[in-house]
Image (tube, rainbow over all chains, first blue to last red; front, side, top):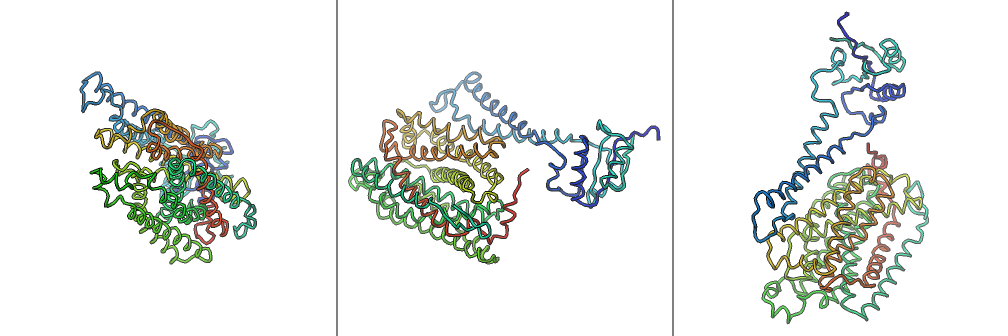
Length: 179
Length: 394
């Protein structure tokens, strides 16, 4: 056992309603690095867990505007400095003609940063997670509702946290042990 | 103003309807003085006012059909307001009479001698002639009348008890109606506004007018529901969550309007054909240039950068200010479309611009209010009503 490390605790709850209440209790007890697992999205879970709004919108905004600047800059540079060419008698810097590609790069950068930013914020890709040490956890994709509290939480104490999870109605509280 | 919280009917409908009627009649009477003083100015101002309030009703009709076609839930609490707006459109046919009387002042192509000496206009005379113009207008209003009233009546039947047959009827009407709507609105915009400059053409023009109309409709709903809540009506029913949804649509359609306006400009700029570019050149002459820049700024840039933030869509005051801004900007946009035909050298505002706007608006809104205040203020028979009231955005 000595080479095994405690990664956290996993407790099972009866239904989504109990899971919401458990999430509130865990949040109110001051835990920060915990998570809730359920086979389907539970309405109101974000508030129950005390989660802040995602910063994805700001990430997308920054990259989208960056894309627009690059789009406009590239076309402007190409047609005024790199390869100036008069086309149908229009001025070299014909911004009207650049709007479409500027807009397209705005959208493209926005879309790509949304996907990559989402992965980053979700800490993905990730090949393994301590909750998979539990055999019972398989039912989280079927009919199981779980709360996991990770050992990295400053308040975590294997014995005390276990008692706490049991006190809020957690069943089958398991220690997540692994290498 | 008081509402019975059980039936959602007004027990005291207040002074709004009367005030609007007074404003409308006064506005039109004063505008008539303007007609005596300066006929041309009167007809052009009147056309802008007419287009403003008609596009408001048309925006409502579009949203109503879209609501039924998509089976939307969040907007159920707003549906009765929207139905009342859409089914008030026929009054605009009566208010179209001054435009028919002023055709010779407004439309260049209505003069037989001008058409005869102009090869382009003689070619177009089969379409652009006074008889066919009048017939088309009646047909447009006929379509909108049938759709608006049909959907309103079905909804009132639903108040008595929901059946699947009623819902099916509303969806069928909307499905066919949407196609008729697209054609009628597009051609109405061609006839009433684009033909002011009969040499010029832009196939996207109808979509452009529609996009502005949808924005003013959303803005109207924001202003109107804010006012209702301030009077203690539907305060717990239409909430900040519905505001948020309206704000999202306002944001989306701000971009959509700019996209359409940009596309129209872009193709004409690129093609660089004199018979197309002159329309924009007219709007870049003298003080029309700052007016054009003003529209780009306040019809697109300002609302875009305000509404992009979630917090401003959920802030009642900020959303209200944007909605009020659109009341100015939609008018400024239609003014920009119509007036360069009359005032070629630059912007020349007239008091009639205001009085005709108040006059037509007062009549339209008093009719709207008569209809809205006579029935439950929300569609009480809709099975999704409770869900719509409970809507919450994370």
